[in-house]
Length: 235
Image (cartoon, rainbow, N blue to C red):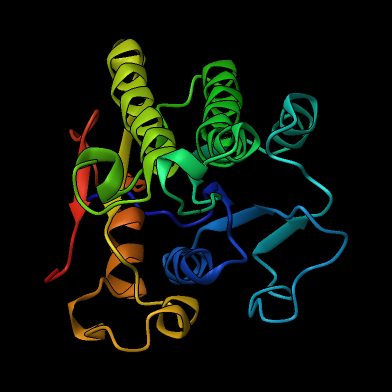
C-alpha cells in the first residue's frame, strides 16, 4: 500500500496566499502537518487555516534572509517535504526596468526558492529522510517568448526552473525528489480583478494546481524528479 501524508511535516512558503491556501487545504485533507512561514507579525485575516490544529504559522520570517530561513527550518520536526510558493510578479518594458526591480524579482522568486530548498535539503540529509521538494516556476520561465514586459519575471522564474533540474540531478543518489510546477495564469480573485475581460475558464484552477503540487510532494510520487510540470489549462 502506498504511504500517505498522514502525520508528515511539510513546509509551505507562500501558504497564506491564494494558491497557498488551496495547497494547505489539500495537504490537510491528506493528514499532513503544515508549517507556514509568514513575513508579517500576524496571520492575514483571509487565511482560513490560522487556527487549525495541524497548521503552525511562524511570523516575521523573511524568506530572502538566509539566517531567518535557516532558523525557521532548524526548529522544525523531521521534515518530509518543502513546497515553495512564495513569489511575486511585475511587468514593465525592458527599457523601463530599474535595476532594483530586477533584483527584487530575483530575490522574491529565485533567492527565496534557493534558500528554502537549501535549508530543506540540509534538514532531510541530517535526518536521512528521502523527502520531496516542490518549487513553482511559471510558463514565462519555460517559454519566455510568450508575451511582453516580463523580462525580469521570466528571468527569475527561469532561474527557479534551472535550479530545480540541477538540484534533482545532484540529489538523485540521496533519495530526495525535486520537481516544479509551471503554471500559466491562475484563477485567483486578484487575477480576475486585474483582467476582468479575460476568459476565466481557460485559466488554471487553484484546486487543479494544488492537486498537482500535493502529488509531487507525496510518497505516491516515487519516480518523478527534475520534472517541470506545465499547468497551462486551456490557454
